[in-house]
Length: 144
Image (cartoon, rainbow, N blue to C red; front, side):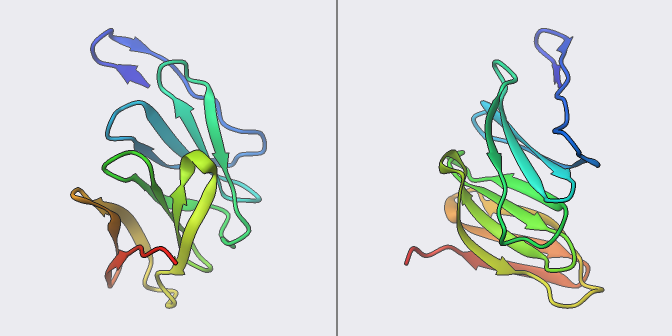
């Protein structure tokens, strides 16, 4: 990570048995960064940017994929969406500070319709979209 104000660079180490980083997202308040890593199990690690220490490690059995292809934080930095890759293309809506997935949904069922990016509506923490090859879908999280 490069700090443009101080002109200092710091490195984030990968987790054990990682096959590489596949996606990153910065909280809008610029306090945390989420890093997705490929491995036997897809993993997301949230780092505190002040200390570069691990704040949370997110894993779940709801995703069959070994990697996440895209991550995004909500406008208030409280929620995270993560898009898994093939074979299941599962999107997760996380209350990341609680390490809890609040909802999940398959965003693609066709092998050729890969999802590349996820993003939140900048004015609504519960509304987000996914974009990919032949895919453009919007979702709204409702409790209950």
